[in-house]
Image 1 (cartoon, rainbow, N blue to C red):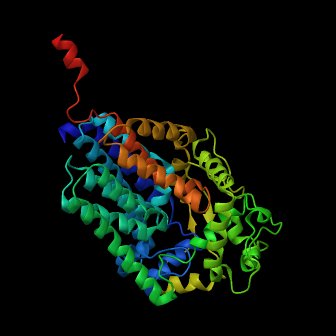
Image 2: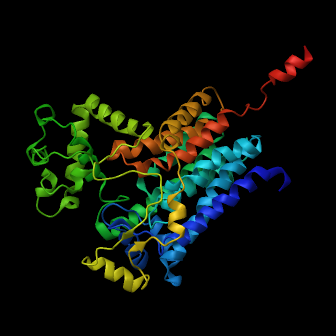
Image 3: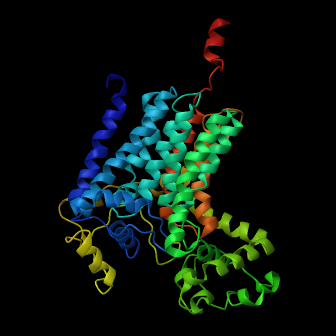
Length: 449
C-alpha cells in the first residue's frame, strides 16, 4: 500500500460518507414506480413489458433470500467504492501518478449524487459499475487479448440489459477494436459475447410479449422526444399516425409527454405502450422530415448538463447535489407496493432521515459547478486527448459522449441520466494526460541536449 497512500487516504472519508448515509436514512430509497417494477420482476423473473429490461432485477433476485432492501443499498455502496478503485487501478496501470488517478476517481467517491444513487433501488449504479469494469478489462493491457475482448463485450451486454441505452456500447467496442486493427478473433469475440446475451434476452422478451425487443417503450420515448418540435404540416403522416400529432397539449420537457393525460398518444384506446410501434413509426418520420429541429432540441437539452447552476428540467424536479432531510412516504394505495412488500421484503417502507447523522450529511456540500461546468471541461479535455491513432482516451471518451447524448436523443435530458457519463469522462480526461507508448519524453530530450 506504500505506493497507493493517496488512494488510501481518500478511501477513508469515502467509506465514512457511505456509513453515514446508511445511518442517516432508515431504509433504502424506493421510487414509484421504477423501484417497485424492478423488485416485482426480481420476484417473478419475467421481462417487464414497458420501460425496464431485467438486468438489474437479476441482481435483486440474487439478494432476494435476505429479504432486505437495506442490504441491496449496502451492496451498492460497496459497488460505488469499487468503481472508484477500478478507475484508479486502470490509471495507475497506464502510468498515471497516484494523486492523478485518485483525482479522476474523486467524483464517484465523493459526489452526493452518486451516493444517493447507491442508496436507491435503481439500475443506474449497476450500469456505471459494468461499463467501468468493461473498460478496465479491455484496456488493462496495451494489446487486447481474445479473452479480454469477449469479457468486455459480455459486461457491456449486461449493461445494456440493465439499461437499454447502454446496449449500443457493444457496437462502439467492436468499432474501436476494428480501428485498432486488433485482429478478427478479438473483434469476433467481442461481437459474439456482446450480441448473444442481447439476442437471447430479446427472444425471451418475445415469448412473453410477442415482440423481439429489449423493451416495449422505445417508440413511446422517441415519440415524446419529437413532441417538442413536430409539425405535422411538414411531416404529413399517414392517417393512422396522424392521431399522434401534437394536439395543443404543452409540457415543459419532452419526457412529460409520456405521462401527460391530454397528450395525443395517451388519448388512444388501450394505453400508451399498446401503440409503441405506431409511435416509433411517427417519430422516425418526424425526425426524417425535420432533422435540424430534432438536432437542435437534442443539443439544447444536452447543454443543460454543463450549467454553472442547476436547471430545473422538468420544472417539477429540483436538482441538487446535497443530502436531503425529511420523510418520503410510499403510495400505499398502489397494489404493487403491497405485493412487493409481501414477496420481496416485508419491511419495505417509506424512507426517513435519522438524526444526528442526517444533519451531518446535510452540512456536506459538493458545488454544482463540479457536477456541471467542470464536467464539460473534463469532457472537452478527454475529447482533445483522443485525437490521433491509438490514443488510450478514445474509447472511454466515446462511451462518455454516448452515455450523455443517447438518453437525450431517445427521450429527454435528466440530471440523473448524466451521472453514468461522469466517471467515464474523468477516466478519459486522465488517460488523455498519459503519454502514449513510444512517445519521446521532452524532459529527457532537453537533458540530452
